Amino acid sequence: MAATKRKEAMAANRDKLLAHAKALFTARGYEAVGVRDVAAAAGVSTGAVFSQFSGKIALYEAAMGTLSPEVARFLYGASGQ
Image 1 (cartoon, helix red, strand yellow):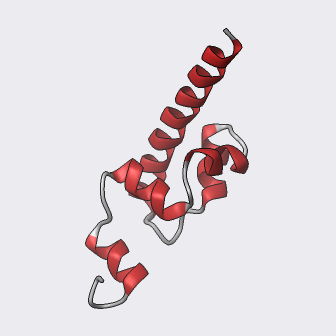
Image 2 (image 1 turned 60 degrees about the horizontal axis):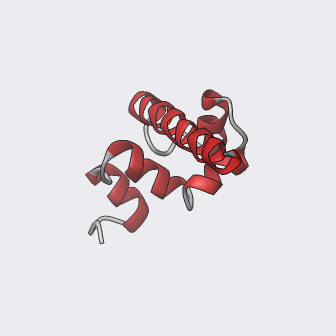
């Protein structure tokens, strides 16, 4: 029973993180949003973010569905690769 509640809590945290991440990235842009910003907005610890996502890029991809061309250029340079 405790494992089920933990899984439910993790799923709820993931949903909150994705919703807040999408809102923040949309409003401010990739560069202006940090993992701590998303955690604070969702009301969870930074550790909770990293228990769900490997980092900011993974969080962005999950929240936005893909990397935008602007983010790809920021991360990988002018070629986008």
